Length: 542
Image (cartoon, rainbow, N blue to C red; front, side, top):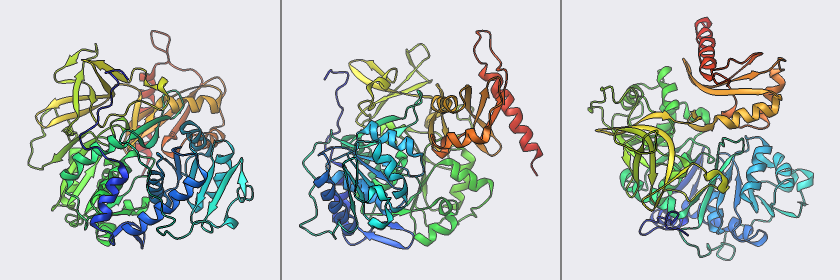
């Protein structure tokens, strides 16, 4: 390993499941997980995860990644811990995503086993047929509920159901194998510019560095109740799960509808820590759903994933006047969040250097940063944010995707975030992307992947981009060609390939694409046309 690629590990880096062990020792009989009216204690979660890990170890290849095909069910959370106890990285999968996409992720990660929720049984056969899976765990699914071809085995995969997974005992519970913090804890897949999802392997040391700086900041304690709004395929979910578990607190899972009504569910669940994207808070603000003082139980609110508007922060703070509000930032490659800013209503953020958004703050402890000018030289006040430190991943699962994402300087390796920032007295202010990557409802989307899917589905050319509209940021697309396509049929084909958050909100056809002086499609003119269409739409709505 060269000096440039050396792993930067924080002093005292630990295995991720050791952080869960801290919570277990602090609060063994307290709730670790709550979904609706059902709760699981730390002892129950620990024992069940060890039992599942033992089952994985009997049929899977040691150390092979374990997929967790579940959405906000016990399998989604206990499955993560089971993978760690099995000595394997977890690979979260969302059952709502197209089966073909999930199968591509399984193959790319080389998953040897799948932990599946009951509702995912219908898609299991297709997944297992096209991926190197040795075992399927369906802990709450009887054989009768599985597809016939999965009831015994598919392609050599063994299926383990509730009938074969006994209650945890000292004899069946598995002790996690010895490992090092440099081992992988999980692999997340983000949108890829070439049309292929990008695998981001995150090590135990990477997460340890994040937890070591976050836990003192938030002062997590056993009586805390964390909201859990995000899907586990979104790395911000880890910002809820593992800080809560490390401190002995409870992870309270919220459905989409519950998340849109915090004034009801914060007091009902006794939530003390809230975490969501700014888009969710903005939608509540537009509908004026939060009365002053309606979220008095919150002592900590955290927003991440996209820019947080100053007036939205003020609106939320009025609803939760007794708590503090943090705006955090970080790409998946820098492990959940690598900067933080604590909001103070008394701060003066009115200058032109701030704009309308809350700053993203300063680097976490141990992280270093610099700004790059367009010519690649260091910039003082404004430029692309480049970072290094113990939270930085080592590189994509496919090394070819590392190209142009890293900078080698002064014998060190730095990650190029692609985000433009401006330095201010209160930390950095986010100015947007320097490439074709956009944020839609907090999800990171490579426009190139959307365009590739559109081209494959339509057989013609396509242009996609994000556009600000009265209802929030929208992903829109143009189909370009001589023949007007059947957009309804095209939308169905797209839904088989892309997850819901990557589907264009508007799809228009143009027989002739505008071109610029270089003979290329003039995206700026298409943006102007789209803005006009959306503006007209807004004017005609009642």
